[in-house]
Image 1 (cartoon, rainbow, N blue to C red):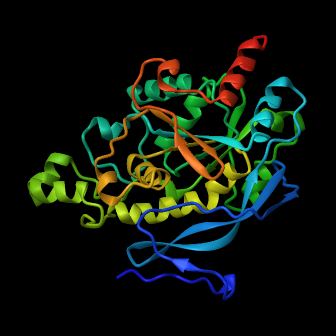
Image 2 (tube, one colour):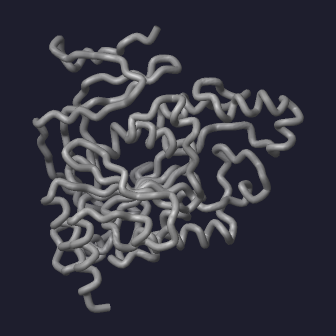
Length: 342
């Protein structure tokens, strides 16, 4: 039986509970503090909400208070920068999820897991096509896994964005990385989008074997059970449940607060880490998430408003108009892009 996890720092009045279906419970109380950073202006949003914690191999959720440091857009001087600000005032934010394009090991029918391999030519084309589909959707922040195939997908996709901001990977490993990555031009900062990399968004860990070889070694039924069960890990690897523990917790702790304060976010990651996040967004059961399939290079759009996620994108469709059902605010954003001189 699952046990509730209590955080002593929350005080005796905090209620703890366990849930197999994640939820977001924002409190009306929140504050923000603005700090100066060596690279960008930084905003810290603090709010009361449900955080995900792990106990053994189970996800548990507790009411907690957390803060998140993020890069915010400086006060804009151009009409391009005014677009995102108008959306933030509406208390509505966009969340784009993209599974990376085809990798070299996808092409060779290998279980890739956390091995860091790049995209194929087809994967590059998929990433560029994904960028065309989201070219009219505002993006303020980008999160990717620590793996190159996800980072390539994010960067290539943003080359197609009509707002024409430049994605810049933030390096915070040490003082030297922060110093050498410093951007001195304020105007350059205004035309940049921060890219945060996180290992928690990495693919589910697996043995890196040929899929046919794996079936011959362990048997097709056993391999099918590992791939389609929620809580049974393969040898030297993770179950989907274990992947969800890190991916969903990171989403709750780091990304969701940005959406809550009006940031438009794109996540470029992997099939299993994104399935875990979608399980959280759509409150899917462990059985329902197992049948969820994500195609490479196909973006999904969610609208975050009043503490709720609404799926507005579809994994099928050949044109952006066919893929996305715009909200009024996004339609206005696109109209302003159309009216801009090129």
